[in-house]
Length: 189
Image (tube, rainbow, N blue to C red):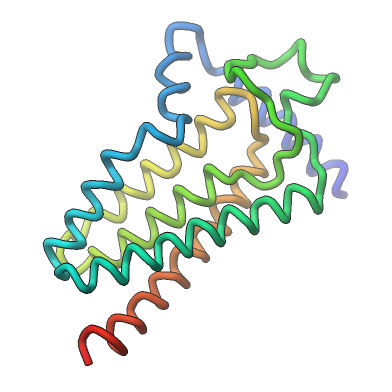
């Protein structure tokens, strides 16, 4: 059953990866770059500061730093534990896929980009929901685009993405709850 699931995952990867075309490659390389969205993070931090103040912003920054560290480290534990090669490292499909990224990496289950972007989207979307009701949907869409970019450039299977996004959503929610507890305990007390 696992083998069948992995076979479907490979077929879906090849389909989604081959939807790309050379004129779009640079755009997807920009989207998949971790530094591209620093301005978005700065805007989200500004909105948190504007709505909650400097003391609360400090709590948010600490919790977000812990959240990203947590999701990154757990992702690495899974990658080393499962040792699932990335599609770009799978010699049996190299001729059938588009390798757009300049690097491959060794293991891919599950995607750190997907988990981190989803954690940030859920966390910020929930924190700012009282002030910007639709922001969470925009952030979830952004996270899905970042996640798809990993398939487009050839470094993750869809299952890596789905599991990464699921883990990121759970992490984002739990760290949002932690921030609410800390704000009530230390800032609003």
